[in-house]
Amino acid sequence: MTIPYGRQSLDDADIQAVVNVLKSDWLTCGPAVDRFEQKLCEVTGAKFAVACSNGTAALHLACMALGVGPKTRAVTTPITFLASANCVEFCGGSVDFVDIDPSTLCLSPTALSEHCAKNGAPDLVIPVDFAGVPADLPALFALSRKHGFRIIEDAAHSIGSTFVHHGRTIKCGSCEFSDLAILSFHPVKTITTGEGGAITTNSKELADKLRLYRSHGMTKDPAVLKRRDGPWYYEMHEIGYNCRITDIQCALGFSQLQKLDRFKTRRQEIVRRYTDAFSGNPTMTVQPWPSTTSPCFHLFTVQLAGGAGVRLRAFEQLRAQGILCQIHYYPVHLQPYYQQKYGYSEGKCPHAEKYYRGCLSLPLYPGMSDADVSTVISAVGAIAEA
Image: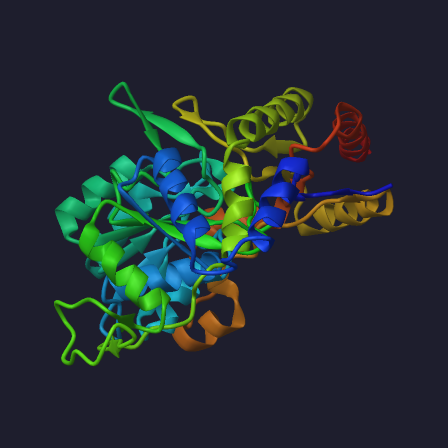
């Protein structure tokens, strides 16, 4: 028996939702997409949601909607998946990296403020809600008001997460403290559409651009058409991509969203068990859970003392026992592409680099049984003690 670090949680209702679409007249670009987008607005609190083919496409489209181009200077966190930085490169912009706050593992507002003072303000900042823990969006938004940059919240890990600000509960993806937010529905994320993503915003102008760029740049809007050849006629005024999502995927996503609260509760239960088991162990540091947040945890990470060699041995020993742990993430600024293009090197983001040397992601998904959790706790505890 193996216990993966993450996996989808599907039931008969999810399967039936897909079957219903397969029996319908629409397989793509139909009513299930609209219904899913409306439900995403309800879940996040944003006014508009635009679903697309995957989370990377969501980041790319968000950058396009904000006009990212060759003159754009962007900043993101080094502890994230490649796409959080690559989306700027897709549009011809340049990317820099600012260190994390060890208390959240998210982009540090203090480090960003120092970066602005030293290097000038960027045009765009892409904070990531790492592992489901919200980045300090109010602090980053305050900096954006001071320095004039735009914000894309990478909420790929955090649909369902909330935080408290001035006594109010704020939902990740609400765009109260950002221009746009992106979501991901890969199978290991909190909910899945198989593959899929979405962008949320409170701006109709940005939402209209996102829908245009999602579908080849095509429009039938009578207000902009140059000709009137007939009801079939469309025009392309700007270049776009085929980043559309199907009704099949959105039917699954809508069904999954009905279970989001249950998924969140179970993920938090598992995180509490892990935290209780490991927080007193001097050989490891557990996943942060700031008191003002209610994360819908996508990951649970520990940092093992002793460096990369200790972590490698632990990784191999757990895998040998069928516990398929993972690493999230190798710092993006140390990837060969970014080193070669910008000259980034070790020492640029010391907190992120220290985190990477010891980090290990343990299994976390709603379908884990209590026995599975106990197995992981026992195995990790034995390795740490040894």
